[in-house]
Length: 192
Image 1 (cartoon, rainbow, N blue to C red):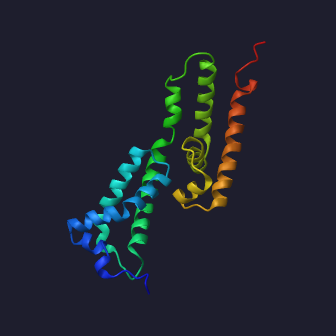
Image 2: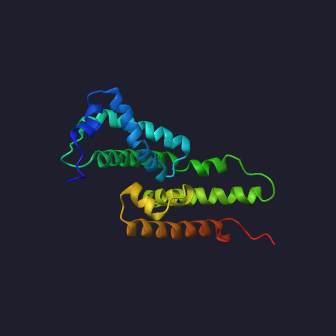
Image 3: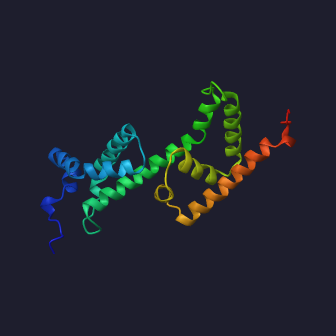
């Protein structure tokens, strides 16, 4: 049983007791793991640093809950980090809702084609609002934030098939809404 860790080599019980050396060792031993997990959620370097700090603060608060009979320290820390990152991601996703489109509407468009582009951005923003919240959120995660299907599954705890079907139906509905809005019957007459 060479895989078992002795009580002396475990760091979390020392962290739970407030041992400053234990805290430093914990950061040294598990900082890379926590940083890796934070970066997997496509956070910027700055956001990843904030997330890592939040995770370690959460770890200090919850180190006493570690039970070696239930799993390793590494598993405990990875699970805590993953949960914290998912919470952070969900909070950010709610805030993101339409920020991207609102910025475009605010007038950041200029030059050739700026007016046409502004009209298109407005159409997309309006169509996004007409989607159901699940479809809108997944489309924003995929298109705006650039997450893969697997990363969305990990962030939302939805099955892969559900993510794919919500994205597909959402994109089809979005296209339909945009085409409907652009149709001549909707007030835009062909001026040729």
